[in-house]
Image (cartoon, rainbow, N blue to C red; front, side):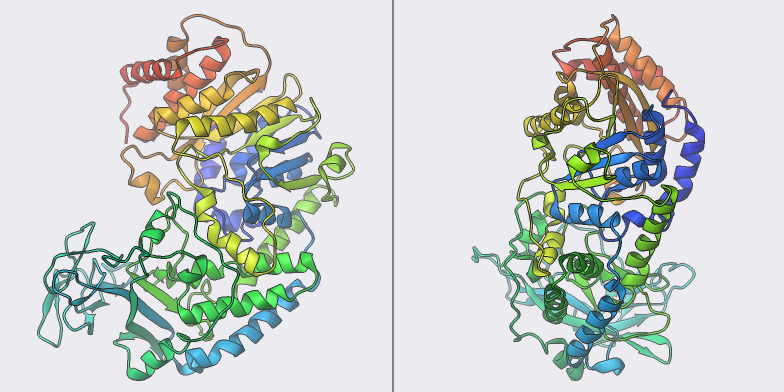
Length: 635
């Protein structure tokens, strides 16, 4: 069956669901993970790939488990392999019955924890939020200067319609109410007139001498974390939100946990592309990403989860409470009025300190405030919908879904098995798998090992072991990426039945990413079949929309385990295939055109040659041919 069957319908549905994917596919949103493929796309891929009604699907890059869930929904058995411990826990828990005491235990733990930390926040009449900035002494003039690039600290999400906001005076740090945040300047009561929209700069500057500043302290090889300074608090009086300069009582509360000792298992932040910025600011352990009161909050929660004897219940509780790292750490910031107050930490693939972090008061239960930062609501927002989606999945399968071992899945006595291991070391019986359907890392796009370090630390603090310390295949080094990906695909295709499909999604604009992928696949005995572009799960993320060649689609690449049939003129054939793919829509971005060109080159190259030799030259030739042929406007 052609991979383009029903493509236009798929595209329309994908465009509708991707903006509310957490609501449309709650089974896979029990906890934080990145790069979840749209369930509707995954479901379609499986339908097009499988030629048996009840077969065995292998996913060697399981992630949060979307492929496993949709294959189960369609009546298949599945084996998932995931190297990251948190993702493996998340995926496996999605297909398990929730412990009968889970919700009650969750309610009891959060109630007891909030009562224990209430004195640190001053009860229900205290500020609802705290704005923290970083401060360093200017190496030029010695002035204690804030690390700020902007003066506006609060504005409405629709500032044209609701122009009121608050700004921070750079001279005396007063919180200034601004009637119109769209204006050029504001004036403080101290007489200082300052810009509300200073020029965007990559460097911090001293507020006195205007010389450059850096978060790390000069001469300090340990790179201590800059001092934190409370610059504003949020009050809610009779339903009216106000933002003011902190009082002495506010400051006393804000620093009430500074000298409290908290004991958590050391969890060093590994060096990597995603963590380079937090390391540059002096952070060395994941626990340091909490403000002192937040650290007491996190430790109190983790200790209570750790004390639960039932390991299954403990794991489910740890996942349910894992949003603490998203909403209650130094990487969280104020999102704006008229929307959820908290901008989640870890929403971007690169972790970096925010110039003003927002500490939400977890104790206050306030009507009308964002529920996402309220730990009482996490169960209702994530765990409960995931549990209900699991029940729906069981019903879709005719009330049968059993989690078991790999051997049980192979013998058809269980339906799903999830392994936490390096999938390059997987050993399954030859010709035992009906399809390999997956979503591999996209070269250097997202470094899961780095960015998920905080979540793995949280699981350890809650008493869960990390079964593997291996690294995934993602790398900015082409040789390392190719070798790692080749190991995984070699192990997977060795278990694949002859004539069966290997299907996965991929996108990138770099030639190295595609040539490395081709080299990883070249000697595995698979032949290229087809390619289709489908809407990606997050088309509007900053990494795509701000890139030089933005991408909004993924290429679905389909291969078959069989011998190839070499033919001539593969460059021209690949260019024609790319044009056919691009003709399916009028709204591709420049990066999509490039991705389609390389994807078509890969499919034709893997079908029309036994060994290409130089993938770089061939793929470049195809791209140039497509550029000459493709005359449609690129948006």
